Length: 83
Image (cartoon, rainbow, N blue to C red; front, top):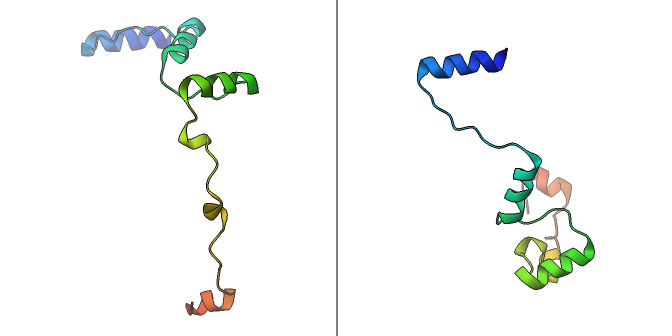
């Protein structure tokens, strides 16, 4: 019923919306042809993906210097703002 009401509203307002294909086949085609990074691949599929497309920045390990957190001052110095 709501679909029919929406069609009537669109007809009265004059909005002619193009129907989109929401089928699983269409979604699979969009994923396959899109330029988005896949999210669920097996380790072997990731190896093939990296060989074809290279390793994206989001999948690279940070440098060791980036892993070292900055030393924090003691809690009471931070509380009193005396670094």
